[in-house]
Image (tube, rainbow, N blue to C red; front, side):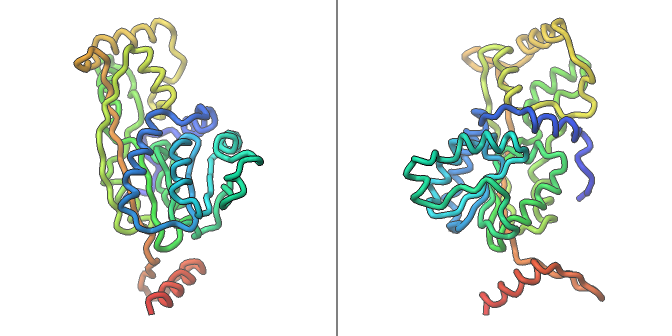
Length: 299
């Protein structure tokens, strides 16, 4: 696998969006989180500690269900930016007078110590990462050996109808290229995860009007492609876009406009670290400790 950042993703644009993204959980994110929750029925491990990566955008309702599912587990919530962290505290933390604030482990709005969580939950975050391989590496560092990762993200077929319209009009790309689930699986293995299980589904959303469609897309994200329109566009351009959406998008049987979203789901375990055999090998203290602990448990 290549080690450079995705060539069709502008990290400056990603950083700007991370700072300005609405402090809400989009409807689609909550829906995808529900489908991830269904997949937990196949996981027997009951985490002693778990980390919700990007809970504010990933799904506040889903967070409440996870907390109910693991009531005796220590929960960490980690947001990339301070402003979003404050918003997450307001939406997730129980007020001081609430009984649940004192009846179980407190939610900790901070990064957990390395290698201490049994589950890392990251819903609809990976496709917005400026350096996804580095992000997967961070996730791997956070998880305890034997723990697992659950994540979801958008796949390559997302908004394919909109991409086709932009191409037909001779406009720059409508969005950056999204990664295939098989490539995500390769990146997980490269980061040290084992037994990755990847699957995908396509969700078809319908919209009453082009204006409603654009409103939904603005809440979900932005165009991070380096070759996107370099400047602001005017009312005439927007009118042309609305006209093109109305005329060219496929329609449902009820006449509503149709847009496809490909959703990728991933699950992987953090395996015992392996030492590469060579004339001279370097092993971190954390990896050596994990290997020694594993050998004690297996003996």
